[in-house]
Length: 304
Image 1: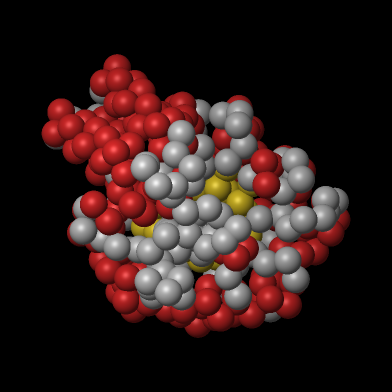
Image 2 (image 1 turned 45 degrees about the horizontal axis):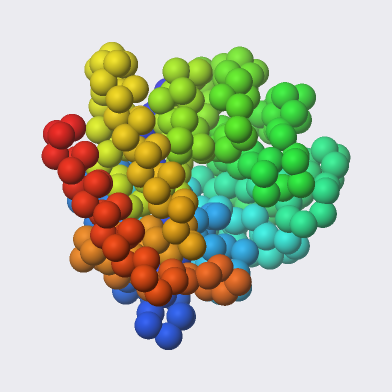
């Protein structure tokens, strides 16, 4: 199926790119998008969690998407996360994304309030009704949506709209990937969203992955996907362990996204720091970041 083929493989969750004053930098965003294209990722997931979307105005989110689309639109598959606390803001973001020519939009069930299934369905459907034909990915992330774990029944009801392309699943259990795959069949795309278990997610039926740690080591995840496709599962297990160790080291720093961007800076890709209330890196963490960067380079060389 042509639509499904667009949504396979490694999709970095795009980082927010700032200038030295902390404002959105379209220039740096374009440079980062071009880097991802150069290393061979098939697509990007823009203005989501890793993009610090909840700290941005709708206008800032639009600016980031515009920079990405101007740089790689038509070259990479682009999924734009458009969920916002208010439906009207989500509609504005979705219409803008569709106008920009994205391949799909994505939405979480909602922010802050513990919305029930009926409200969540209306939220998603109101956005779909306000747009043309752009397909939707449901972003299932219970850890940040008051424990809302996409029910099979609701997934089936949304599939019946004819507008749902699939799910990005960031629940802790890979069983959810199998559950959603069984409900949706082979004609939907399901992205693994927990980077530490990419291999397990693929084994349970994921079409690929969307991840926040892909962004500073995309080559390792691309190589992991190659090993899976080649049936070299033992070697894939070894590489997943290496990747997960790097992720754990990154999580030991004071700020995951600030650390990720500092690694990118060492790779010649400045993206600024993070926006408050996220914390920047603490003084003295340079050695740890350098160690993470050197570990990535070493693993990349071993798994060429």
